[in-house]
Image (cartoon, rainbow, N blue to C red; front, top):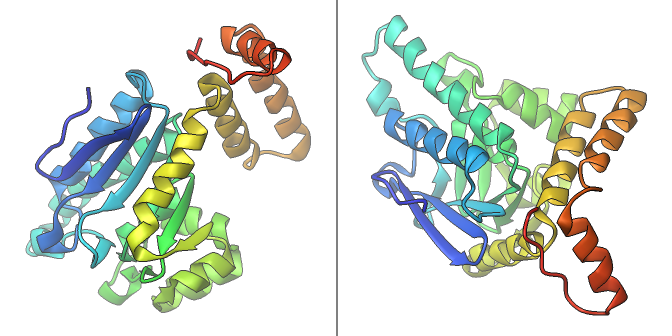
Length: 264
């Protein structure tokens, strides 16, 4: 079973769904080194031994912030070597999130600045509260996004919009995030987490192997030519054919009942 840590609150609100809350509200849920390691451990374990989990929802505790980015108080006074060593942990963290085969959905409940915006963009898709706001503020302190932001944000909103947002460091709203393609839905703040969990439940009721293969086919295919993507899709498709879930899905359809998927 997945357990809470000093920096993450971990719950199972329904069968097969894991709710993970960044839990440093005194620091606007900013990353410190420990939170990054905790996220690495969690997402790498989910990739290897999901223990019945089929979808992950990520949010922040409190109402003020999803994540304010890297904890600059922890970073203050670091040598160049210490800064770079810590950043290697952040790099591994975002790779663990992106590489996790389970669907990951954000419930962005407040400010997502710097690394918080990068984490949001690294998830498969995000729902955002009507009070959420976003910014890639790194150029304002002399660095650039280094946890995937120049890549994931550009893929979400397009190159020209990403250049505008990253080079200016400007704050943008939940509605702008929706309009530009970073967010999928804007929800009232008081229903955000429940709305996101409901979507995770819908995903978790589908065939787990098929869901994972579809996620991988979309993600990998977007980085290929169309012809290579089509070939990759067929390889992903063929992995679903010999599964018990495929046979159960067809049988349940014929028998006009809800399928019972086992992830086998």
